[in-house]
Length: 140
Image 1: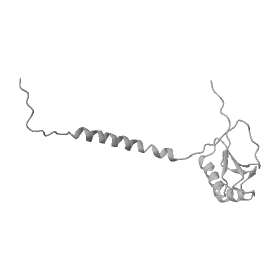
Image 2: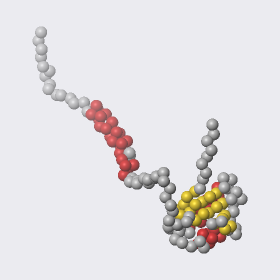
Image 3: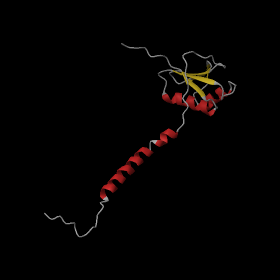
Image 4: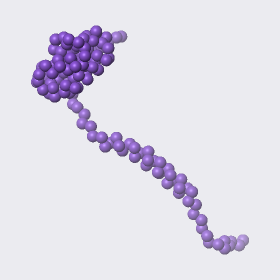
């Protein structure tokens, strides 16, 4: 048996598998690079305790009944226009940036009345807003 080497020593390197691997790596890095943006957002989460802390100021109470009438600290606002509500809020005095507001709306109140009250509060400078709710009764 005679073994002979081939006459030409031309070795061929197939680059097709190398291209496949590079494309898979490229797709992998492109897919994982989009998740990196979420880690750049720095969010400091608030802390909560079960103990109620007393408020430094008495909260401003804005109430909306089922017909859409507004009450600011138990005083009825003349009409339901946003300008009238803003002037009633401005008459309360105090610093709107520091004053806390409790918004109490009837469950049957139209959504527009609540949005109007929130808009009037924002336009007059109130930023600390709480929406009053009641605990839902547990049904069996």
